[in-house]
Image 1 (cartoon, rainbow, N blue to C red):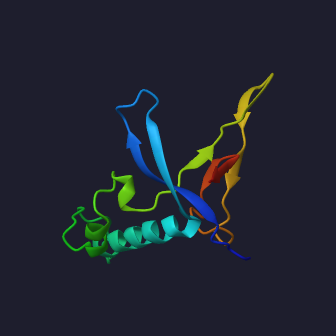
Image 2: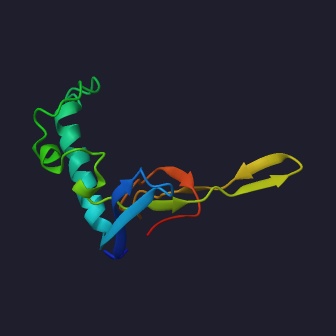
Length: 124
């Protein structure tokens, strides 16, 4: 399988004072966001998942050097974030309502392998 690091829009700001909640974007790449998010997740796991398998240790930024560099996770201009569009399609018949879920095969995707999610979906 070939993965391509294609163009993606990255959210850099939200102006909540505007009536239309103005969003600001810049161009980036799909894996630009994945690389930063994966590094943050692995760093957190390295320091906060108990090595003996007993559970999760209390969260702290003490040993999280990369997290400190990235800064506030709620400031979108501090790291690449790729918004996605998801649509829940409901099918209604005499038996009630249902919807389709997509199984993200772990061996075929870069992100969220083994998870179920609604479809269609996409990162733009």
